[in-house]
Length: 177
Image 1 (tube, rainbow, N blue to C red):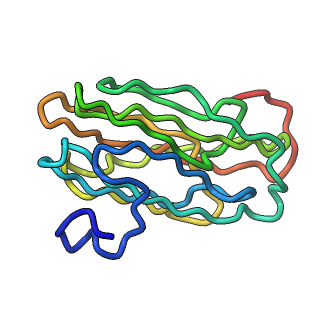
Image 2: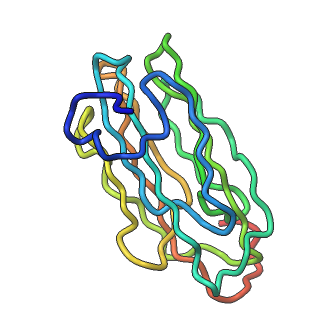
Image 3: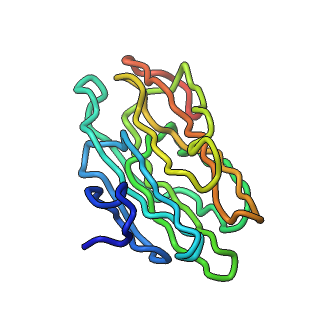
């Protein structure tokens, strides 16, 4: 089933059609490692989304708790990082025709008492509004902790800076960073 005639969209496993909500969760013990999106102005200025997961390294152990974090409202700029040192293991989103934008919510998982460090933000993805967007975790040992996004009211699209961190391989005392 193909949503668009653009060549980029043929072989992707999109989780949504344009203007449709979606709920994507990685299998237990896996986290998001790749996020791709494709924009269409004529389809509600919306994007198709695709996500990939990978098991976490053995040293991280099993997630002890997972939850849906705060909802980020449509039509606004926002920054969202998983609470309780969580890692992003899923995304849900709902489309709002009135603002031609989506609300977003991250599914976060907590790994014992491991803490994030060496965090960084990616450059804008996509580099320009309305382009194809792609994040693939640049190196092993980095995890997605959240995102910061800007919304263009004129172009009705978002740019994303994903927040990537390493995680300690020892238990730490901090509740949240």
